[in-house]
Image 1 (tube, rainbow, N blue to C red):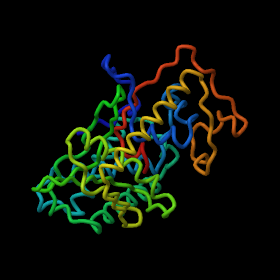
Image 2 (image 1 turned 60 degrees about the vertical axis):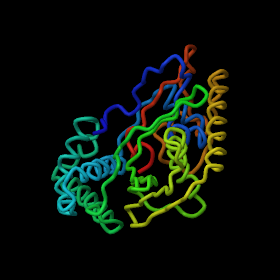
Image 3 (image 1 turned 45 degrees about the vertical axis):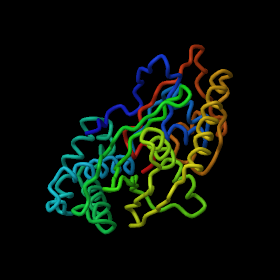
Amino acid sequence: MTQLSDPEAPVALPDAVLGSLSPSRAADFKSCPLLYRFRCVDRLPQSPSLAATRGTMVHAVLESLFDLPATERTLAAAAELLPAAWQRVRDEEPAVDELFADDTDGSRFTEWMASATSLLGNYFALEDPSRLEPASREELIEVVVDGLRLRGYVDRLDVSPAGDIRVIDYKTGTTPREAFEGKALFQMKFYALVLWRTRGVVPRQLRLMYLADTDTLSYAPEAEELERFERTIMAIWAAIQRAMETGDFRPSPSRLCDWCDHKALCPAFGGTPPPFPADAVLTDPRDDLPEVRNP
């Protein structure tokens, strides 16, 4: 199983690799360069949230569910996996206990666990896991392009007998409005690009499964599109390199700022970032957790 601990731990890079980029960190820089700096240069900690922690737990259950024989992959069996998944999250990230520090009678925790069970029920409304045998779950995929390592963890890969690949990503939030579909698919195109470059096959389908409202978003990429996307990723990396040379990581305020852990340090809201390190280096943040990307 994928380890859930320290998703931002630095990873040693071979000499031939000049840097590393995951879909989450690429999306961070694209949406707000200062957020990227806070996470990858300053390495500021992030507080656990109820939604993200629940996402971690639900993803862990859906990963473990396929360890069971096909006939035993039921909602009841999935619900029985929740306590072990919660304990696993606590072991890997003890700070999550703070989420229920003032829950003296346990009612909030009980309600929260029930909401996780509800999300699992919505998953079963979308597909029947007893009819599926995934090729992999929580698989690390990576490729080096012009010295840049592109890497990430895919929730699930389905491969047909004919070799067609379907990339599955579970989301514990709601389906984005049409105007935001492109942002939602950014992560999936990143995975498709890495799979194409490593396997020589363009995935037949990219599928986002939104468990909060029992909906899906599917997309069929093409090779020419992935070539353009690769150029976009390399342009993002070039911009990151320029920002590292100048120390100029500018904020880009948006509605998402209300949920940012680092808002108090943002100059767009009257804050002051920490001094830019004189010996600043980029870490290679691991993207092990789907909920770290987006719930």
